[in-house]
Amino acid sequence: MELRSCTNFLDLASGNLLDIPQTPRALPRVMTVPGIISDLDGYGGNDGDSDGTSSVCRERKIIVANMLPLHAQRDAETAKWCFSIDEDSLLLQLKDGFSPETEVIYVGSLKVEVDASEQEEVAQKLLDNFNCVPTFLPHDLQKKFYYGFCKHQLWPLFHYMLPMCPDHGDRFDRLLWQAYVSANKIFADKVMEVINPDDDYIWVHDYH
Image: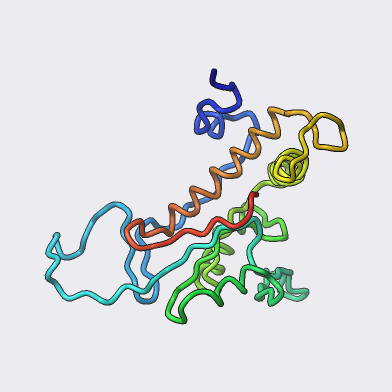
């Protein structure tokens, strides 16, 4: 018998139950980055002629995690967002296992809230300067997804604690489950904006 909580994930995530605002604009589906040209729609500039001259594709890894390996703060004078690499981030250490030629793209959330009017500019800046793609989860969704479903239900379950009592995780909450599915759909959509499905490898880090 199929559980109700496991049916029709996409419809559940696309519903308006959480009233999630849409991001201003998706990144281009056809994007040029150093050493590779990605075209998700299958359009080729050489009209399908595979014998044409082309650049060598770099191996790429797309690392998907809850948080991007970045620090963020506003400049006191300009009020603009400033970003820097978080050298202590575990995600940066993952690169040690890749070849030096591997290009790494990070998909995840920032540790700060960015106003919707600034998200497009910030997203382009992070992609250009840090190879990072931000998800911009709304605060309420982030809270329900991470601190709700992940920490109160998934974490205990993955540590062999069944929700038989309050100390071993909370009872199933459909709203938290919907938040988890909705958040994961946002992450998946962001991956689809930058992936080259024929060549890229996706590393989904941790259970969040």
